[in-house]
Length: 503
Image (tube, rainbow, N blue to C red; front, side, top):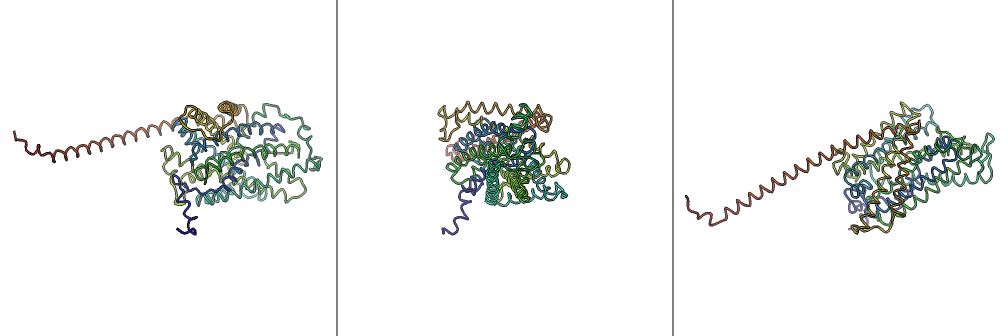
């Protein structure tokens, strides 16, 4: 085989369960970084700063600690067995089939709602340039473009996501340097405001809205951290996963502290928290006040890219998760269809159809669409994180019992840190019931989702038992027929049988 054609054949040679190992180290590392920088920070931070004030810094720090342990738990699981189904497969292995079914569909709920939030954010950003253009039309155009990208090839997705991530990371780094210089020089930000460290506590202190309000921001911050687990979803399509993924996961952990906590801290220094609002990205707010109109427009383009990146990742990840469910007959067979380009197009299209709901939400309730979607999505995020943490507990138990070998890349402080993180995440869910905002809608949906998942699993398991019984019956019948044929052959070949006297 000539070297000139080998690269084109790599995908087929290295395929795993129909997937092509097309994502390079460069792409996976940037996907991991991009998953840690999303619209929850670029857009959501503005509304949360207006809600909770500088105390949002603590919210990002506390939730960041939980995210750190989630990523380390994911890292150990991925090193145990890199697989495209990610935590759905781990839930099946370490908890049971019902857990794989539940976690898979909750993750899909997460990304279905996240996608709606993202295309809503795209519509909000575009409205800065074209205020009269319908938001629903912007959302629809965005969806069509990203659907086409995901259906063409994994390589195209990886390359697009790589450049999306480059833009996001560059923008955050630029903001960190610009913001720091503004604070050091005590820059004039207009309307009598100056960038200063004192802005953090000068306007009614660190907790201007009270500690309870800070607790209520945890849900939004958890959503902002969602998609950090994307690196685990990509494990089955990553070349040399066991050497690439630990570095990528560690990179996510470090960047949580720098990009998220650092950015929110600088935002509260550059401008008073009262200068931010839910209707505009806080980064656009800052750059628009620098006296350079183009700066605000450039940053608006960046946050637009971030929203498209997250929606792009949602289509990618749900396609893989739904195929994993379909292979176990826990989802419609259509979502398990794989194209000749190694793309699970059935699952991607299924999610895209749900994203159309986001288009209609932008037509019906354009102001509330983002908050409603992110609140429901956070339930899926929390369910996923709890699943990862508990699966790592079970992995450690099996390793301690000598049943499996534990990877060298391990969850620190397990299982104590697991249980503390799980307890914190449960507290976040409970706190959602004590708000008057969209979070309460999501909280009331919990029993509805529980009933739907319970009934769904009962139907799936009943069908699986029926199919197993039919297969067993068919197998027994085939065995009996084969035994009859063998007995007949023996009888025909028995010479004593032919010489037996009649009567």
